[in-house]
Image (cartoon, rainbow over all chains, first blue to last red; front, side, top):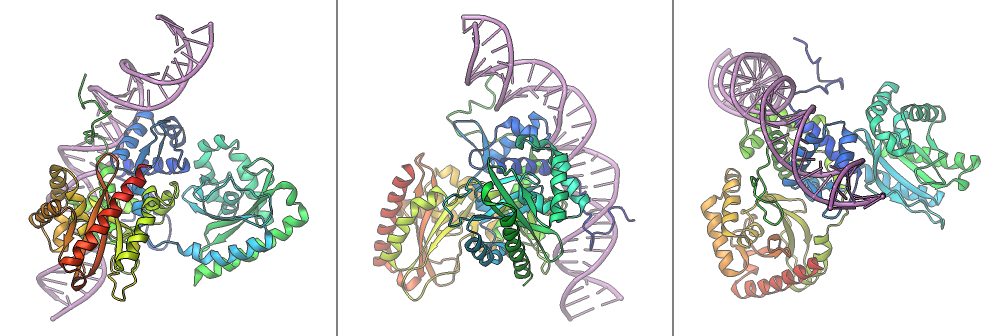
Length: 265
Length: 265
DNA sequence: CCGTCTTGTCCATAATATGGACAAGAACGC
DNA sequence: GCGTTCTTGTCCATATTATGGACAAGACGG
């Protein structure tokens, strides 16, 4: 009687059934989360999840009745509702990672002077959870705390993918395929960047999500060896020439290792 | 063609179908949220939701796979997972209410000197969203930000119930019946307290949830007239005799009206 | 080693969620 | 005004999905 394999040590559990609807609702929520305050039109949720329109419509409206989703009067777009942060209050804030990373972020921000981001992996997305503004007058500020994107479209996402087994990374990238076009990229490009990052030891994007910017990201692994987060510097491209790229990468790598020690404690 | 009534002005929409499983999953989540960090054993979720054990088990484990729920190694209890605050980041923090209430809380805290709470209604629960510690050496601190309880078991809950149409209040109290016994109260007691609060103009509990304490709560209504929150003072009973109860209630009532003005803006 | 907890699993069955097809608005052009 | 092309919303027969009774397997205690 060994059907779903064991379930103790290995992480091969996924396929529990009898809850399609719940999984779908969560998939919808994650897409809505990517839309932040502004929210997302129904059609986009349909496209991003691959569900049919009636299904998404039904799910979204039930979630509205439950207070989990809100609808913007003006645009008709759907967004994460009040009740989500209310549920979140059940957990201790700030998280372990944020506490562990705080000194490193402060140190690196002072040393580097450009904008620093701390980004976590959540499912198939990256999520910006902290941001430090540097002292230089020209800062890349367009990415805010809470910003969520498919893994692979930012340098942080590339770094995180590079730090996991190639097969897992491929699976995630494939799962995000439908969402890539909105960011003007595709599976092949992303996989190429991931391979490059593996070779370099850190993630890099010559063309940041913001026009004219460049980003460098190092991954941060949990004690079990899986990448959980990334530390990123973004700056106008001209401020990150080859020599400085090297310098910045070294600082980021050093602090990433420090954070890894700190979460172990 | 008037089936589900209109849908524009009136708030009678509720009964959308085709999503039983999603609603159930959310009901489970709300119970887990009440368990905060410590979480809740399966049996208690079963009891509180009225669902069958196999159903709760299935739901909870799917939510674990999805990262929405976590399980405590030690106790086996289930709790709200990482991904919930991550979804919550999609919303602007702090909320409008928190911003609007801030000056009032500061003022009242200085004037009164005992612990002040701001509590919101969320579904059939109250949820503590802010707390101010006063200057007196003996403070009621056992209720923390994030604490969640069935509407009706705290003075804040009684105040909120008192401020809504009697019929709505009765419906909520009835829905919470199963959860009351854990707080050593029942439907009749709660309804009695609600009636008393309506007469007084504020909620009051001679026997607070903490032994030997007394609490006074005023409700805060949104512009549409529905109570959304409550402002509470808790203190050791001896510090809240009839004369001081009157004083404190007046301050709370004054600040509640101020907050109502502020959220209108 | 047996009773009494708890949590976990199975599977036939009924009920639920599904999605194709159609409808109803909204925004635009002319 | 009237077609055109968007978007979102609804219906309902159908098969897929979630359900829960019954049984199993640990964990604890005496």
